[in-house]
Length: 369
Ligand SMILES: [Zn+2]
Image (cartoon, rainbow, N blue to C red; front, top):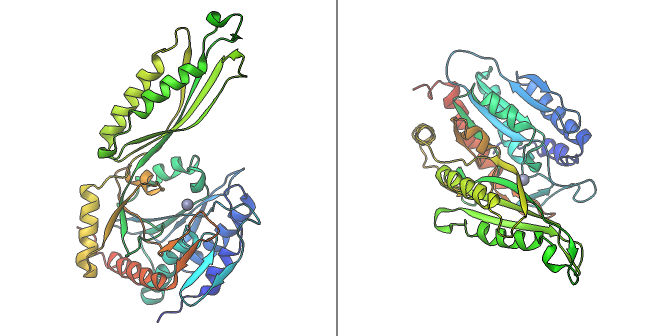
C-alpha cells in the first residue's frame, strides 16, 4: 500500500481557510504551492486583496495536449466552527477533508507518484482558486480566461459513493426583483396606495410556474421582503430567487419568461427592476468529454462510473468554455458543509491510484489523438 502521508493532509486540514479568512486561505495555498514546487512546478500568483490569492501552478511545457487540474482552497467554516483533524480506521474527519482539500491532496499525491517514477511532469497545470464556496464571483473570470489554454480538465471535488465521476452539473443563477409601489394609509386612503407586496406575490406565482421538473429546471423564490406594517399599503418589496437548469435551451426559455414577468405590472402603477444573473452555467455532457471518458476507459482498462449532480462547482465554468471536463476525482466523503464532514480512507487510496494511472498515460502522450 502506498504511503498516504496523512501528516501532510493533517497540516492543511488544521488551517482554517474559510473563504473570508484571507490569511488562512493564503497559508493553505502557500503550503500546497510549496509541495508542488518541490516536484517541478512554478507558481504564478494572482494576488487578491480581500480574498485569498488564486494560485496557478505550471509544469514544464512541451508540444501536445494540455491538462488542467482544478481545485479550491477555501471552505465554508468560519474560525472555531469546525476545527481539527481526526481519524479512525475507516474515515478522516475535518473541515475540507472531502470538499475539497482532500481532493487537492489526491491530485498532489498522484503528481508526486508521477514525479518519483518519471522525473519531469509535462503539460499538467494546477489551478487553485480561493472563492469557490461563495460562488467563484472573482475567480470565474480567471478560470474562464485560462481554460482556453487547455484540452482537458480534471476537477477534484468529491467522488460519488461508488467511485462515480461527474459528467454533468446544473447551471445556476441568482436573481433579485425590486418592486416599487406607493405607501398610503390602509384605512383612510386604501385606493391611493400601490401595493408592492401584492405585486411581489403575483409575480412569485408566475415565477414558480417556470419550474419544469421533467427537464430538470427549478425556480425557487427563497426570500421575500417587503412592507412596513399592517396599516400601510406596502411601498416596496423584494424577491430573491434561484434558477437551476440542466439544459441551455431551458436557460434561454426561463430567462425570457423572467423578463416578461418583470416587465408586466400585475398591480397597476408598480415598477419592477431585475438584477443578478447566471453565476455558473450548466455543465452538460459533450462529445469531447465523451472522447475523454472513452480514452480513460481504454487506457486504464476500466469503465468509469458516471453521475450527474444538481450542485455546481468550478467544473461548470471550464466546461462551458468548451474544454473536455470531468469532475469528482476527489475522495468519497459525506457531511460536506456540516461539522460531520468526513472522507473515506480507502477511497483516497483508490482515487490516487486511478489519477496516477491517468497522468501516466497523459505523460506517455496517449491522449494525443
Ligand atoms: Zn463546497
